[in-house]
Image (tube, rainbow, N blue to C red):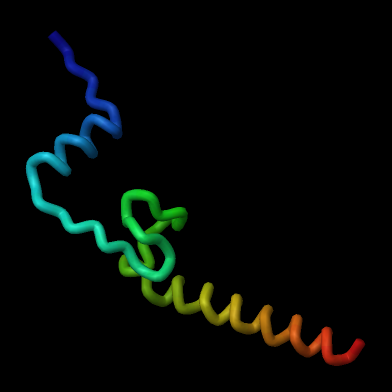
Amino acid sequence: MTTTLTSLTLQTLYLNLFYYEDTGCEVSQACLNCPLPQCKYDDPARFQRHQRLIKDLKVLTAMRLEKT
């Protein structure tokens, strides 16, 4: 007899076997519901680049609004 485990089944098994406090971060309140394709803690440099890009875009937007 072959049993197929789905991703949801594995997630449920994991959560039931181990205590895991899902505190999330500033991106998402819960790790299991995070929209990022990779955790910011798994690749901090990538997350920092993303944060800098957002900051730069805000500055550019503010500069453009001042010119008008």
